[in-house]
Length: 253
Image (cartoon, rainbow, N blue to C red; front, side, top):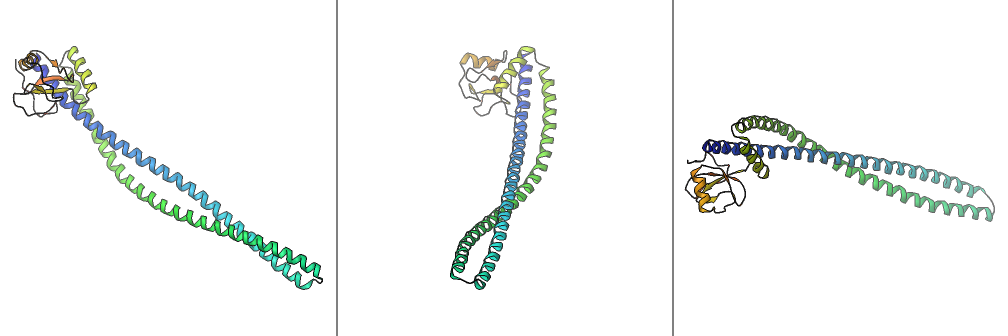
């Protein structure tokens, strides 16, 4: 009977609409968790990079400071030699060496200072990033636990609805089943449209008078010429919405 098929398809539309909404929420939560996870992974990789850079800068600073101390020791030794050696030629030679060593020390000091500044800057950046990572991990931990609970609930609800869906699909013939599945694939969860006041309430296209009368009569299932949704009569008032409306549609023989 067409009347029974209409009610069954309307119920199917309601189930598929709910499944579609639950699936969307489930995907949204999973995508959010994946985004959190990707950000945390990126932060950790950046922290490792900063750690390596800090170690490199600290090592460079230590090397430059060691070289600086060694050069200072050499200058002290040369100055002692300058006071003990006689002759203007020897003194002039040592003074020249001291001048070269002093300029080398200035270069080492600048290099050591630069390494120190880089190490301090990298250290601060690493500390800031580490603090942000802890906050992000805290948010992820909280949201992830909540999200897992919701995903589990949504999955159970979807499984339960799909069982009802399979049961309802078993009540319609193969032709209507194929038609409904085809339309629902095009409009997930929105394959059924209520007809009111002579128009499809999904695309709001006015139906030809003969088609409208056929939908009211309920002796055959028709598709909207505008959106191709399966049409079910929903009464004479101008209000109403698409297949997600509450209650079963009125079907007249």
